[in-house]
Length: 447
Ligand SMILES: Cc1ncc(COP(=O)(O)O)c(C=O)c1O
Image 1: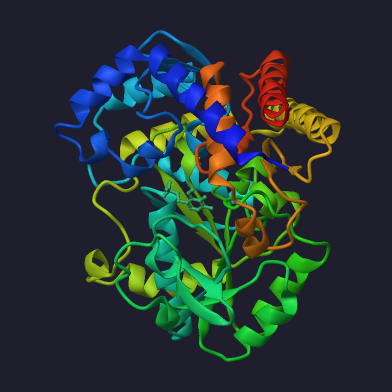
Image 2: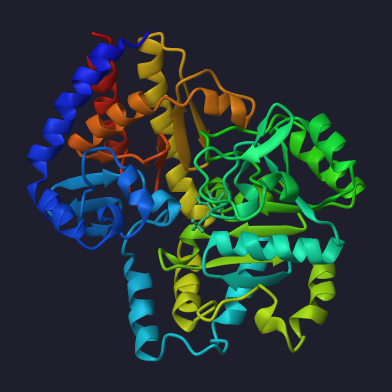
């Protein structure tokens, strides 16, 4: 249905408009290229649409202002890192107060126990540890799982994403496990480390775990990194039953699905995992993550955790659990991501899906828009059942154009997703602005 020549021509116009609107960012990008690889401190920053990245002057609540003074409705929110909204006064105050009292000591700060208790209350697992990032937390949990079970492999869902964790950057090619396209320099052949199964396929999971070599299944309760793919009714119950029957630990990664409620899908859907991982927004944007475990696992891990060699066990990190991060988690979780916050943000996400669906329907497009709590995402196909079906519908040209059109009109979507996330700082008018510009983009494309 999409005329590719028209798409290319519109994209060219939008690229020109982007360059015209952002002379300061262009100058800073030119300067940064002399000292930073690809002109950015972290490679994903090159993935935004436009021929150079926007440089950000400031961000507050649901708004971001670039160095050219242009303001945006931020629907990306740091790809979930700022899901609470940017620069929350209570977090910045807690940070300033803690920074003046010392940032990192490699000893526990008094707020640590409050943080453990709050995570336990939200996610219904009693025993917690901190990490610097969700990637780190996942790596640590995989190590624990192998240590606890004595089994060599981990299992993941096809087209999952759990951070830059080597074992998880694997997909299925037929029934072979192969490196995920784009993965750089895998340290070990993923076929040796990883079992991969399609999401929403309990039989495939059962067959694979029956081989007896898998320590844990690491999964999101709904896929959120290849569009939103929701679990079919009964699937997650089947996953729990199958993993338990095969002695495989179940690790639920709530880093993105925290959008479903204060305790993620684990609490919202009454899941019963062995480990939970959570990261990104829990410290209001300060790097921090956490992982929780059952009492039984906690007890079994006490031995190694108290061992003299814990510092070389492959779990930890010098700055992990530092006083600043702990203060930030307390300030965030005591004031954000609570039931009353979700009561505000979920209706905004519903309004977004209604608006996008109205555009899709008006043009009779075979696209869909999906929602999980305060996260919503459109995708260029009917709702997929698994990651491979979702991956097959990726259309980078179309996505890049739609994102750039919106960005040029003051609305930021997440790069490498068509994702919109809502904080209590967004207003209905922000949602409507997206519906308007998205509708204009689609109309321009189909005229
Ligand atoms: C589900 C999930 N887990 C873990 C991560 C890794 O988070 P980080 O990059 O903050 O380590 C991500 C990142 O997108 C994610 O989506």
